[in-house]
Image 1 (spheres, rainbow, N blue to C red):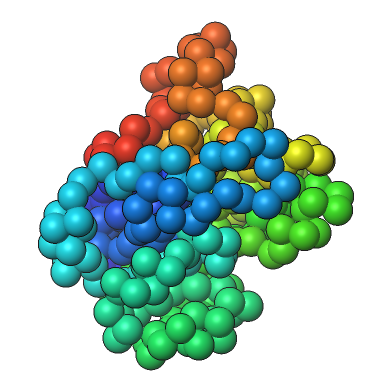
Image 2: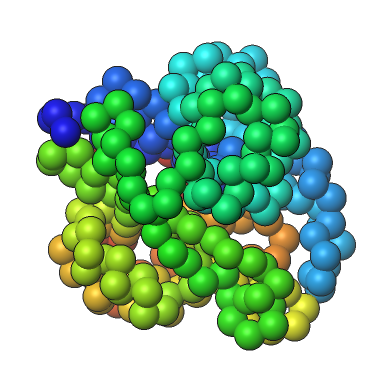
Length: 259
């Protein structure tokens, strides 16, 4: 790997991130449809239509941003991570980096340059590893299916994007293995009408922070989908109560953060 010192992320909405490493721009988990375009999610206890908010920029700005994208990385195929608008707008020749398990489905949508990962790859001098997640527990967890995350590593910096997962022992194992300086987690305690949360609660986030005391932790997946039970203010208060506000940040839509 060569040195690619510049690393920056921009939260678009929910789990959709623009990751800049050196001169390369990687769009992660694109949900690009307008507010309400996904409709009501099943098994929720409300009538809200998803996503709850629009992207933090205009359609013209979105088109300009998409021109700059060098690759797309997809953790899993739930519609708030890979929606029909993303399939429509993205260049079908753009490299799509994904777990092997979802590569065929992405190909069926017309994408021609799929780079699937079994363990790790080197792409444009960037090491990209696949990680495991647990999208809930029990019957709900089984229904949610297999999910993954990514580790992006240069000679100088390592970013771990956990993806849609609760805190469990495998996340600790991934941290031990990759030793990231920066970790992105999906917060919000998303919960269906039955079962336990399917992504991290504020308590999970605090546990992760305690386990990785030298890492900065960035919280996404907030105030964009209807089954999340914890909002930004609630999570920020929990972070402050535990004295972690200097290294755990709740990202706002449209916010940029240099790693």
